Image 1 (cartoon, rainbow, N blue to C red):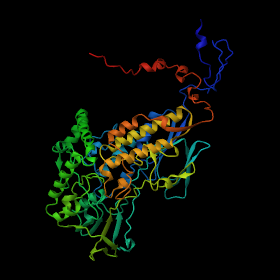
Image 2 (image 1 turned 90 degrees about the vertical axis):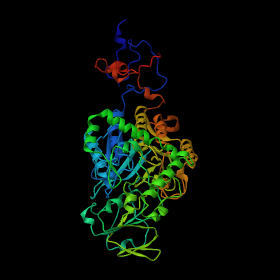
Image 3 (image 1 turned 45 degrees about the vertical axis):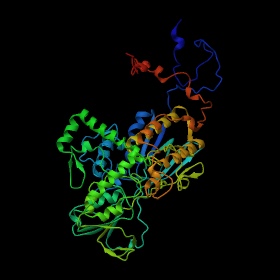
Image 4 (image 1 turned 180 degrees about the vertical axis):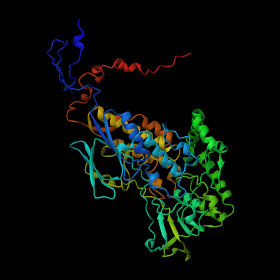
Length: 589
């Protein structure tokens, strides 16, 4: 028999003639057939918001994971970097080991310090953008001001403005990936007299003063706060300023660094950080196996401390004793500081920081530790409730961010504004998808941070989840995809059942709880970093509601017309693609 019957029509999109004799069986379709091959994927457009770690990773992976994709990244800043571009206060550094704070597929053996300085992290992100040629896909100085879902078209309308101009812009997309982060909306505290001060004042999240150095000589400086920014700013300014007062209202644990055996080989500085020599960095760059082993050990250590986050666990009690002893020892010169600073709440109840050099700087002669509450700001300084007045040339507000997860702009879908629905409690599904918000995917949104483990590993897994969902939208002719209400409720109930088992639910003021002492944990994943990796690996598609495009009149319309594009191509061997990467099973001995 001639094989001509098996040849596809000249045009794979042209309906075949079922009456033609070359077709062996004349079976009229019982469902409408979509006249295209199963793998002839429709073009899909994705808008990515933010050009930090999330946005850059999305821009790298989208064309790799999704065929026939068109995408653009919008960022309000003039360059890549996200929070590492916006923050540049003195002493800015990573608060976990730098070799664990990098993309899994883009290792950097050349970090100068165990806790990488902020400018190096920004340079790392700039290097990633350059290597993967991302800048043509990024529109800088493009601030998003509104996103609105059109249920009729199944598209997002994203509008915005060009920074420092009157120009407006708008875009449409089938899906949106939000990489906005949430530790970027800095705010001044509610202290009377903020505008009265005649000296220099700035917020660490919006640094407008000189970098640490000669310019600070002779200055009397107040640093308000005891979060991670204050803990980094104080030791950075102490060697230069005439005097630094740290105004501390709360208490905090200063963490001992992890991987002590590894640290033993490194050079410590007076600031408490650990530095790699040029020879060590060159050895890492030359010997990839050695570097991989070093990085593997660090990540393994980072993932080994999840037990410390469980209330009354042996690891928690051990950490508490060890941190207390370390803090008392370093503050022995001024023991009254230890009495005020060491918390009664558990280790990790609020964000831990190793604070290289912070405790050491507090005991220096030119540093004061002020625990009396601030009453008001005056023209020349700060008045406290105990009646004391302290005069300063500079006041640094290291008072944190708006950590409520409320988006910076309206996100409108199905008659609701996410700004309103998230004001009291952010409602998501697995952190990635937003309740009642179709085709919208968060990276490092609510309940995405980790109390232990690598944040960037979780970020990559959240994005992979989003790519799988967007790929499904594309393949199956899905117009809108949104988590079912019962799935959202189940996720919420799981978190509310999990967190009381942990130290995060104890009474301490933390951005994990939106800046409150008590309340629902909205910042952290309910489990370990490795738990998140497993949870996000295989999406439960049954947890979503779907609406299909008009030409997909059947649940199986995505099957197309029975052909694949490979069967029309002339590439030799391509039609046997399944032999290119065979997963050979192990043979039992």
